[in-house]
Image (cartoon, rainbow, N blue to C red; front, side, top):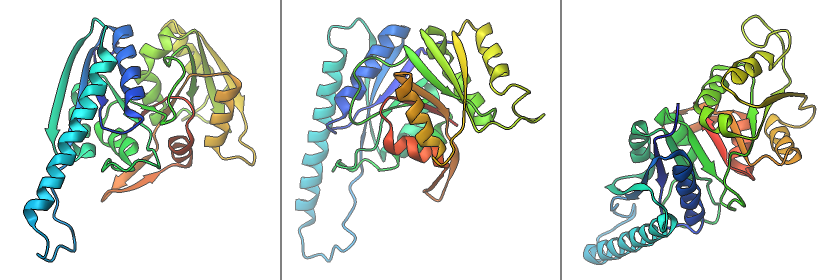
Length: 278
């Protein structure tokens, strides 16, 4: 398994250039085709539009804003790939970013998105990472809005709880795990059972990964009074991990995101890129 097509969400946010740089570095490392994707949101009449404003003026302001955002994101993408010998394409669609990305992602191996920035003023949905990860069926690498100091994947913290979601995430992350110098399989509050963990929680996963050539060690931990997400972030810092891999727990019902506690914590407080899969 290898990542042969990588798609990166390109918008005009301040954090976007870092995200594109990460995607370009990954494409170079994996020899992948890189797709820069930009969504042009549709024009929407204001909810309290009473006809007193000129519709033409409103549409003109919208059109100018959309064109400016597209030009900014295209320039950032060009800068990210400049000087690299990559197979690339620039793709623009008219529609909402979350729904369009969920569809486009089904034809790629890895999707690169940005963590929601609370200071962002663009029309990008605040729940974009989780909405797309849950809907696309593809591994999604979420890059922190604070940026990264080095390409992710040298030291990886794999969150393992013997669930379907963690198995999906571990499998989707195999190209990263096999190339990593160090992989820590973190097992938190494990309970042995015939349908989940064996007699030694994490041992079965480590054996499976080792057969793929992954250099893995198992760490068992207890969340105690902390939530699981906070424990994951703490252990990632302890090991100087530059990537976290975890299953995304939750579902979308009528656009209301319902997430597990650990997923919610990491999406809100990540300090390194997180590869999520559902």
